[in-house]
Image (cartoon, rainbow, N blue to C red; front, top):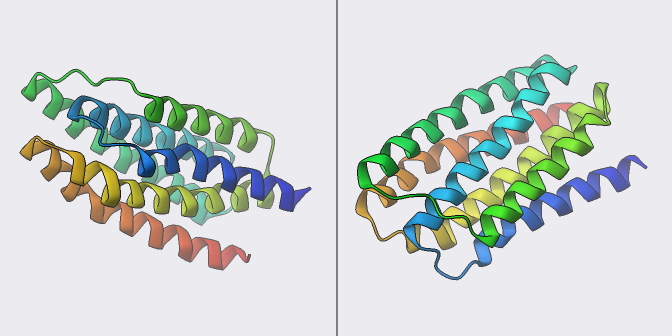
Length: 174
């Protein structure tokens, strides 16, 4: 059962964010919505990790995800307001939101070490998928210079999150 749960979460993460990597040149308004949605998904999971996680590293990582991704969303909101761009929903943003909700619903069924492992396993896959989407689709597709600069600016944080999640994953054991 644990292996099936793990595979389900990884598949859901790959599906939800992987769609962004395959999207055909989203416009700037769609990119803004994708960025906000992807951050909100990680904020929601992070809040759950803060309250439900049993491992101190997992709880601290969840808290960091809430803080860091909330900060990115604040920057994105300021930028779209400044540019007069209204984030535009897209199938990619909807898929990310749906995948995030499925992940949170699944995590709510777990506790203790099972929760910690499922959460961190998802974070590793999710951050890799987001980086792939940034590199292959979102940054190359952004037409507005300031939007592109924001995406480039936040990319190192996603790399750091991925590495941190991998370290915690290794400490929890595969």
